[in-house]
Image 1 (cartoon, helix red, strand yellow):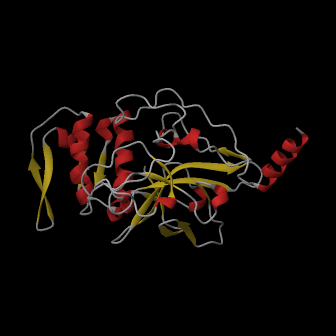
Image 2 (cartoon, one colour):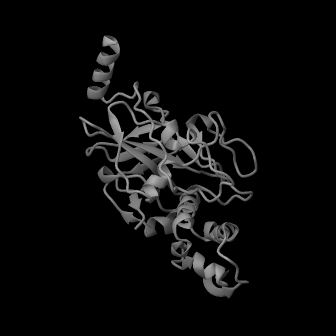
Image 3 (cartoon, helix red, strand yellow):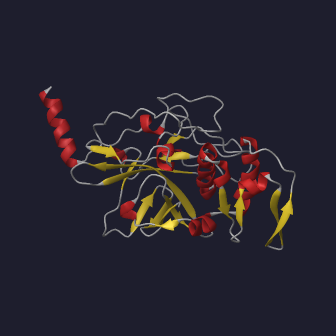
Length: 287
């Protein structure tokens, strides 16, 4: 008993991850529209990845994007990340968990698209009429327009208005809307859509993003902070190329942290993730 208390005290002051805090229970009212039935309360991001010892998850508003991400449903432990064609992702060692969501059958749901997919699903669970994303050309593509029969076509790289049959704003319609969105949006358009925020202010729902070709996007799905040192730790999720399972990243450079990544200090110019190195200025936030 005394030994356990001593270890807990040392971990609290050192910020070490060896001892874990209790996982939080999932709040009522969170909806994950692609699921045909509610997932297990034990198979959520928050349950699978307790905050590091001495840390608490940062506060998030009820019903917010950050809270919704915190309780993402996960596939069973040991589930591999797969590509859209069913093959295994090349680097399984960077996968800490797989989000329980489909990847589709086309090479579309890549890095920025995974962020768009989750943001669209969250929007659908709250207010489908607010779902919209800018294409790389700058065209503002609204889900409400799409189901009303207003869409677009691309001619010689120019986006022109087009019509389609109107339909009800169902989840199946959302899946159809996302196909052209994935095709004509990407890291460049998403980086323009997000508001830059200082890395030190990172919170759940923010996006590490390098816009371009090539570019990459990694979603901050949760944040914890040490009670004494105020060191922040982030849980990160991504898809990659080719389109693949959305997966929580494992910290392969610091295995003791598991899936948590220490937020770089003010003197560090980069944030290294397993498959991309971001500049500290490359953090954005949805409005």
